[in-house]
Image (cartoon, rainbow, N blue to C red; front, side, top):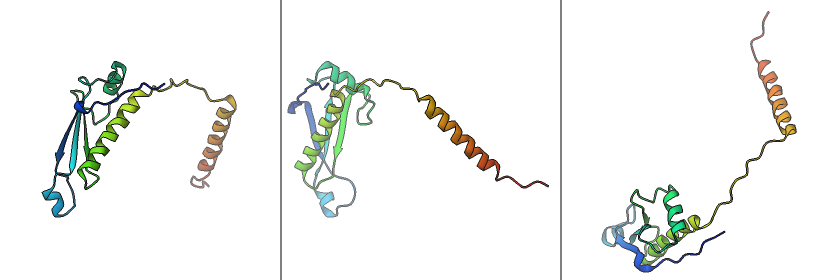
Length: 134
């Protein structure tokens, strides 16, 4: 089951910063990278999504409950802005989709027997590799 959500532009704090890494003179002159900050607690997301986001344990979520995303893949500020928003939506989408509960299963008796026989055969092969006695 998926919970629907909408992101309001006023909830996103997008800042243009200088990109890191190679890129020649353009990197030193132009602020093309984007820092996106999204405060989970102050957002208009449904309560259940906010709780799931905080429980995700993603490295982009700070202890204060703020999602920080840095996008610098493109030379265009607008493309980087769209990429950051896409990544944020992807993260929220992950929290909005409820995972099915895993039902533990047990191996069949036959598969356990096959595994143990295989281990016995392998042990016999390895035991035969020892030093030859008198």
